[in-house]
Length: 335
Ligand code: XMP
Image (tube, rainbow, N blue to C red; front, side, top):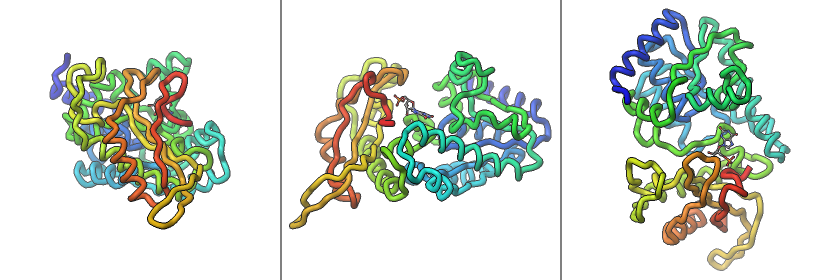
């Protein structure tokens, strides 16, 4: 049980002692870990930190703007936002295989980040949001404490860039990282967001990734998340989920929830006309460790409202289905 102000004070001192007057770069993904790492390091060394935020075009609705507002506007952190969506879309064109898609996204991410990092010739340190469970996971895979999620945490970069590694969250568990984030002034909703995979919407658009599919999916997903947040959670508490604190809405009552784009067309009817449009699947699960998961028993009224809104508001979607598969045998993501 640690005292937050003391913890921050000590962490700040440690970072200052470690880097001195050197410059540091950090790859900001919009996720909790890299965000908290950025906020902590900025608290310690201010403008000696430069963040590189690679926008691969597979982020959720308004996510890029949110990241820029939070860091650049509110906290005054130096952030380079790189719009690399053309590059990512170009390399993903014609690729259907899930593993190949993941590899391409990971590779391009490293490439874009590396190019930016090389320009910051005065940087001596690469900061990463590695947390304790990442350290354990990687140790299990024999990787010397380096993280395995390359698309996420840009593993392997320190060698090619000749940078020293700065990992101020290495000893923290996820719940500690979240508390630290709030104490550093990051918004509660951001810090308590559901996990989002490094390859982003790339693994939620089945098969070939196209910009038009990503645009539809972003809208559908935003509607789903908005309704989950706006629907009060009135059922008895879900055992084991956030044990100390009862969820107040369905977003908090689920561990992960999102929309998936299915590149399949089905027939519908709207007004006097026949439609022939794409399908969106909704996925919501409850889990403690993400190794196994149950599909969430969302209220039918909530599902009905989300379905109506998506079909009415997102042109190009005329059918919404709900995924009622557990993990195992299904995984949480569809790819
Ligand atoms: P699955 O789909 O395997 O997902 O049941 C378990 C958890 O891991 C997340 N996930 C990923 N996270 N890069 C990530 O950073 C990935 O490639 C990736 N694939 C899955 C998923 O969102 C879920 O929380």
